[in-house]
Length: 168
Image (cartoon, rainbow, N blue to C red; front, side):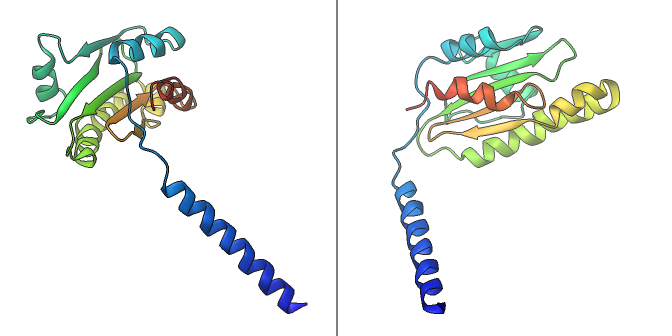
């Protein structure tokens, strides 16, 4: 009986290992398509009223990246869409698409420390119900992009489902 258990456990481990290795060979997932189309798709399904979106081709985009987000070097950004909150809502949706060789983790850390944590401070003091939403800030990394969604305590996954339609 013990021998059968050992064989069964070994078989389960072998199958689990094979499945893990098969996942390692998955094809890269790049975020493709025009970022304006992605934002239009997301905002048609989710209420981002009062959130202004700034695109990489907007006149003040680089100034906003520097002063509001803390990015002093954007040479590794291929394209991006940012947002400015003017409505007292935590709702945010940001996409940064990168050139090859970008340090995506460093960008994520900068977003977290300069944008998301500033949201925490603001809303914790002044609008506690938005603070709870800000705490749900969620990142998703693609091979060539980073997306930040802050919508509500449960809706970020639904936003990523929309964005995933542009991944391939």
